[in-house]
Structures are given as structure tokens and as C-alpha cells.
Image 1 (cartoon, rainbow, N blue to C red):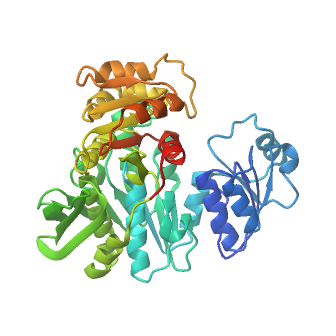
Image 2: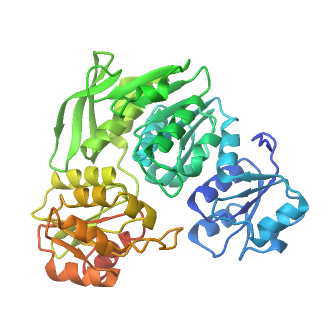
Image 3: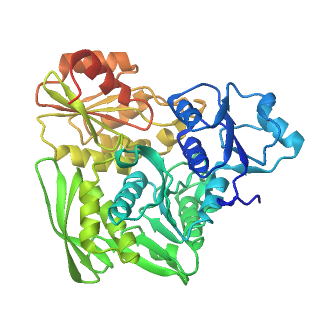
Length: 464
């Protein structure tokens, strides 16, 4: 495999440079003096940003974009083998790396590579660890699957020997990584268009833990079902966090303010470290914070610095994000797209000030919807009223013949107040006519359902 040395800049070409992850890697390399070219189908804010930093980007993708002098080519899973640039690169015999392989190669250049994995909570926990390191005076390189205000985006090219990475399991991307510290937040059935079943998912996470350097550490949620499976036989240091006193790190005396943000005491191996106050809501974020605390204590960061870093974390985009008020009702947007995430988000919303809780949900991919239909219905039914939009296709064709109506039919086994409203415009019209002052209206899903709230605010209200 082609090895990338950060102290030896070369010319790297990205096929599909406009994605959030690819553009982030390109930005890190530009900041290290690499020559970066790339291509995409359309211009975007991300491509314009890279051009300002010195990248040369071509639109659309074509074989002519494979210019002289390229040392290695990076491509995403979305690039098919009939792509004209991909075919030209193969014809010329240029070295190639997948996006995940490039990120893994970058990790080899850092003394400490902190990889945060899990079916959900990755973006938040990666952001929390990043905030703590920044608070401690460490300047890490950071790559996150969401926008973190304190670094002005989803990536930060740091100057010190740490890299913090959100490690995604889809297509086994994280098995191309080289963590010195790996964090396992939770392991649930997801991405079943790629994984065969939950056992297949668990096997991949087990392999991920085994990728951790021998002198590194595995930080694991003790509440994962049969968590011992993932750490059995490991020579690496194992650090646990969880809900009870048998874990290395746990919380006690948990209480919530009027916005559902938690304050709690943190214990390390039975000893009280001190108190943490979060500025992000929900019980699930206490678990994310414990993961971040356990990770940063491994690096001997003082607890008061950890507490300050966690307190300054105000959330990332689309993670129970306050959007504004329309006609007296509050609009929140949340990225939750797996039943456990939905359940956590709704529990957070129920603790948030409101009269009636409305959820406008857009399921993400046909295969996930079909595989988890019963679980979706059970989680969503806990809202007072549920509106279900058309399914967000993402990378798929609807060969299953499933629709939002199927979700609604299942929800109605638990809650009659469920409605299939296919289009965003229809949802917006319905909300304006029916959501009342004092209600809470949450748009939810990993597609573009957030546009519903944004359109409502643009037309009827103001961002606060």
C-alpha cells in the first residue's frame, strides 16, 4: 500500500473531493504543504473553501482531470469502476487509496491516534474529546462527521502529535485505521445493507479493537451486551465506563436542569473525581461524556481541565440542535436515524420544556427501514404526534417496495397520532396549521428533513 508521509509532501488527487470527509482530508494535506487536485460532479461550499486554500478542482469528473505529476489517487466508495477518472487512473497504473486507507495512513504519522467508534454517539464523543484536548493546551488534528464551532468546521489540522478521528464502521472503513486508543461506545444492528446481521457487526467491532496498538488502550462501554467478547484475549490496556460501580468510570448523583442538561459526579475506580456539568441535553450524553473522560484520563489530563472542556462543548450541528421559534413553538433538529438514537432523542425531548411533542421523521435508506421497522415504530411512538416523510434513499434503489406509510402503520399499533405526509412542503403546511404555542417540534433523521424546520423559520419566524 502507498505510504503517506506528512513530512514528505506529494501530489494527491481526490476523485469525489466534495464530500465532508474527503474535503476534510484534503484540507489537512493542504495545510501540510501537499499539492492537492480533485474532482466532483458539482461545485459546493466545501469545494470553494478548498480552492481558496490552494486546491485545483475540476467539474465534472472526466479522464482529462488525471493530470501529469500525480503521485497517488484517493477515491470514495461512491466511485464506481466505470467512472471515467477511475478508469484512467487504472490505465495509467497510478497508486490508489480508498478514503479510509488514506485516513489510516495519516494516523501512522502521529504518536497518538484516538479513534472513536460506535453505532451512535461518535460525532458527539469525538467532539467532546477534542474540546478537552484543546482545553488542555493540546493542538490535535481532528476529523469529525459534523461541524464543531470551536474548530470552524469538521476538520482541524493541528500542530501536535495527536489525531482524533470519528471512526465509522460502514463498509468496515475503521479496519483500515491504526488507533493507539480505540473507543467503543455501543454496538447495535445497523448498516444492514453491508453487514449480514448483528453478529457480523459485532465481529467487525471486535476486529477494530484488535487493531489498537499493543502499547495502547481500548476504552469500552461496559453496558454493551456481552462486552467481554470485544476485549477477550487483548494485551492492550482495557478501560471501562458504564452505568454502575463495577466500571472504571461511572456517574452518580445525576440531575438535569430545565433544558435536560445533566450535572453528575464522576467516579474513577471507586474514587470521586469531581462534578461535571454538560451544556448538551440527554442521558445519552452522560454516557458519551464518560467515554471522553475515560479517554482523556488515560493521557493524565487533570480532571478540572476535563470538566472545563466538557462544559464548553455546546454541541455539533444536527445533534439536538436548537433552530428557533415559529408561532410560539420551538423547533429542534436531530440527526437520529437508528431506533436507539431516536429513543435517546425523544427521551431528551420529553425532558425539554414543552406542552406537546411532535416528531417529523425521515427514515434513512430502504434497507435500514425494512430491517428495523418494528424498532422504529416502538421508538417513535413515544412522541405525542409523529409525522413520517418519504424515505431518504441515499445510495439505494427501492427494490423492497417499502414507504413511510409502512412505518406509520406500525406506529399506530402503539400510538394513533401518526401520519404519513410524503413531502416537506405538506409537512410544513400541516405544522403551521396544527402545532400550537408551547409545543416542541423536532425534525429527525440523517437525510435532509432539517430543511423542514429551516423553511418554517425562514417563512414564519426567526432564528434565535
